Image (tube, rainbow, N blue to C red; front, side, top):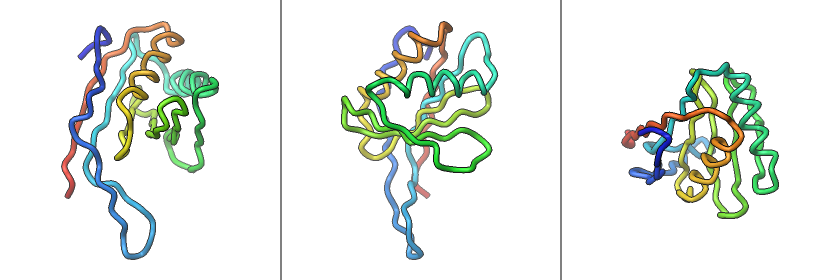
Length: 129
């Protein structure tokens, strides 16, 4: 789908799994991949995402030493959370079990507003193992 009217309907939510050795993992789920037109370097995409997240509506953190920026985002307006990952020239919205579709639409709207580009939006789903 293009940025004309993405709905961010969530076809499959991930399932929480609690391994015996502790922690929490997610199996299956939905990822929305937003690709800018024209292409942009990942550092510009990260700056754009952080600029939006610095607004009054979001609480976020990037606590991991990973090769790609990963943000755990809490949308205070919708009392929901999701992850954002920046890689391969795209911004990915990773759905969590209770992610509200309205929060994804809101983040997308803010990216459109501040990004000054068109976005192609693709949806990928995976099944639990």
